[in-house]
Structure formats: structure tokens, C-alpha cells
Image (tube, rainbow, N blue to C red; front, side, top):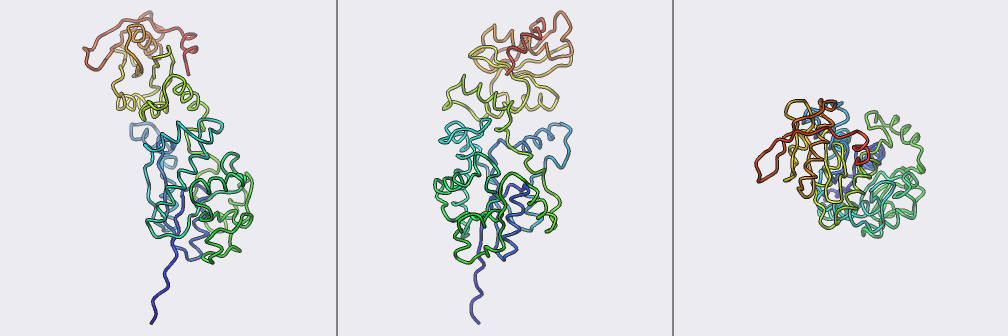
Length: 352
């Protein structure tokens, strides 16, 4: 008896959204062994919700599940979660191809992730890469010319199979080599998700996140404002990961060129801030319920006083003439300040 023919492997960039879930199923049904990879950048809304739920925030269980693992379980394929958050800071702060509508470096992001996936493909003995990309669906990263540019810059030219749009693209290596049947691919294009939803219904995929719901903080307008403020007041090469991560929570106030105050909005955010102080000065009210606040930047008396007044403003004592606030600074004794809550108009002028 001859040796059994080796089964072809492919690596799927699997977010677990509708498109990537469909893409892996289409290829797996042709007898290809599919390995899923999912990248953790530190900017996923779902990951953040999961973190906050662990701190007591009320959360819908469906909104915190890892969709890549869900898709892997449904289609019975292995999925590896790869943390690229430290390396991703370079992509975020120095994108060669710029930002989208927020601070989302989508083209550089795709190049980076495809490079990582190619490395994974080579290590695992796979032959090609699967993505759920659809031509014309995303204006920055999924236009026909941009898809080709990303492939070229990532060193993946010809290696990417996009099952949902393959029939309107040049044949990939997987199709040319006969590893997959091009006729069993699709010709989806544009932003309309109805064809994908109809396909999902036909193949029995009925549990997936809302299409086009988005899962990236970097596209959120409020987060983008905070990031742009950080860019303006901090040298990009000196920015720390925790500075960027703290942009996700609380109310943010720019009180001068050196100082910013972050004020927790609820108990879960207060816990989050307490766990991620990073040497920042902390403020909390003593006699009334209120937020935990962090003062970022140099510790001047004026900055401490303003931070304390902001803390009082968002406490249950906001309508009092004065509120007692505890100030905790690393390396110094805790002290108490009796302050007048800051006026609403001044807070709004400072708010980022």
C-alpha cells in the first residue's frame, strides 16, 4: 500500500465574525485542514467588556465571549490566540499608511497581521492563508487595490485566499494549485451583508455577532479624541502601554499641557483604575460616595487641587459647599484636602 496523501493545511485569520466564520467553513468543506489564529492587540471592545465584567460591571454574557473560539468550536477546528499588544504600539504610533476615521491604522494593521500569519503558516507547515475579507466592504483596507498592496507589503502575494470574493479576484496559489475548487468560492462584494447572511442560513450558521458591529476601540470617536490628545501632549516614542489602555475607561480631563485627570464613572471603573495606577496620584472622597481619580503628569500643588475638585464634582457631594478628598501620592504621606467641587462649565471645557 502506498502512503496516504498528505492533507493540505491552511491558516485562517479568524475574528469569529460572520465573514471569517463563513470563509473557514467554505474551505474546510473542501477537505482542507484549517488552523485558526486570532490576534489580541489590546484594543478589542469585547476583551475590555470581559475585563470589566470581572470587576463587577453588569454584562450580557454573549457580549463578552471570544467569537474566534466560538467559531472554532462550531466548525471543530483549533484556534490559537496570539498576544501582539506590545508590538502593536509601533503600528499604532507610526503607521506608514496613516489612520482611518479615528486612530485606526487599518492598512498597517492588516500588513502586520498578515506578516504574523505568514510566519505562523511557515511554522505549522500550512500552504496558504484564509481571510474573510470582502472586496469593497471596508473603505480603507478592503478595496481591490489596497488588498493587493497589503499582500505585497506583508510578503503574502498569492498566498491569501478570500473565499467570499475569490471569483472576482485573481486566482490565488491555492486555486492555481488545485488545492481548492474556485467554482465553490463566491463573488460577494460591497457593504451589503445580505448575501453572507443568506449563506449563513443555508449552512447552519445562526449564532454570530451582529455584522458590521465593530470590535475596535481605535475606530470609536471618543477614544480617538483621547488618543489624539495623548499624541499632542506626549512624544509618541515615550508613550506607555498603560497610558493607552487607560484611555478606555473613565472621564478624561486635560487640565494643562502636563496634566490630565481620569475620573471613574462606576465601581468597576474605579477598580480598574485602582489596579492600573502606575504610580499616578490617586484621589477619592472620604465622607461621600464618589469616584477614584488618577492624576497623570507632574505633581504640582495646582494640579493636585484641580484633580481633587474634579473628584468632588463627580461625587455624591457635588452640590455641597465643600468635600473632603484623600490624596495618595507614591512615596509621600496620604493627606486630606477640603475642596469646593469644580464648576460644571469648567469641567466641560477641560473634558476630552
